[in-house]
Structures are given as C-alpha cells and as structure tokens.
Image 1 (tube, rainbow, N blue to C red):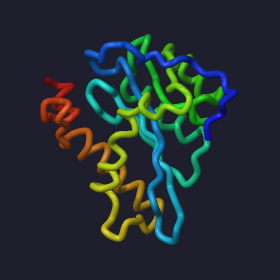
Image 2 (image 1 turned 180 degrees about the horizontal axis):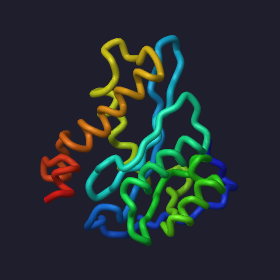
Image 3 (image 1 turned 90 degrees about the horizontal axis):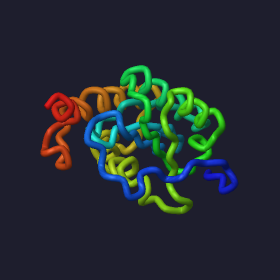
Image 4 (image 1 turned 90 degrees about the vertical axis):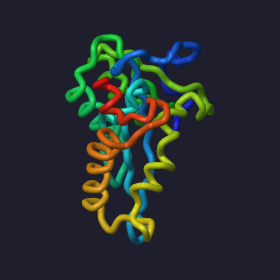
Amino acid sequence: MADPAAVVAENLLLGQPAPTAPNQVWVGDITYLPLVGGRWCYLATWRDTCSRRVVGWHLDTHMPTELVLTALEQALTLRQPALGLIVHADRGSQYTSAACRARIAKAQALASFSRPGNPYDNAQAEASWSTLKTELLPHDGAFATLEEARLEVAYYLNTYFNLDRRHSALGYRSPHQFASW
C-alpha cells in the first residue's frame, strides 16, 4: 500500500523523450499470481523501457521491500548500468522504503516515482501483466506450488519473453534482437 507521507522523488519521466539506448530507464512493478487453494505469490520485475527486456525479477509468497530489492539487485548485477540510470516505480511502500531508495542511491541511479494516484505514470511496467498472465498461467488458472510458479516464470521471462517474444514497439523484434541490432 502506498504511503502518502513517504519521502519520494518526483516523476523524472514526465515530459522526457523516450530512452534511445538500453539501461537509461528501468520501470518496476509487482503483480499477483494465483496458487492452488486460493493462495497467492507476488512477482516483482524491473523492465528496461528501451529494449522492453525484463532485467531483474523475484517471486515470493509475501511482498515486503526485499521482494523488489532482490529483483533490483539482480538487475544491477546482471546489467551493470552506467551512472544516471533512472529507476522508476509507483509509490508502493516497497519502492518508497528507505532501503530501496538507499540501494538506488548506492548504484548512483536516480529514483523516480509516479504521481499520487496516477497509474498512467507507470504504464509500461503495468501494461504487460495481462499478457504475461494469459501466456503463463496454467489452464486451470493457478500454479500448484510456489516452486512450479518460479520455474515457469523463470522460463517465461529469461527465455521466452527476453529472447523470443516479439514486441510491436520494437519493430516486431524480441528484446534480445532489439538490443543486438
């Protein structure tokens, strides 16, 4: 839940041109994935806005700050972005936490947050959840276990989505093809 009193940065993406190269802007968000028996797991991702590549992700049965921090750490380690990366998210408590803001600052990146109550400010992060759930969820609509969900999400994001899935915004190339072009 968003904390309206949280100390946050302004939205650095407003009025800015689209990034022209990977690792200039990452957007983050969390979605819920169903498990059998009415339980849920939570998927946090960081996505590069230029290449559409999911640069970091983490899945768990709870969504504390560590959920987004683990995904962010994975992204920073794998992508090693240059100084000045903009890391944008909504105003959820995980993103506005002191720990998350400190990790962004330690990476010499710039924190950016959506305006209060404006989901359009983080549209690119949120837009692909429907597609992911349509393509990823089992036919019965829920994963049997957290481990099954982790295995399926890992394949979907690391192999299918990043390497093979074509995006109209990328000229019908995959994130991998776009970044290699």
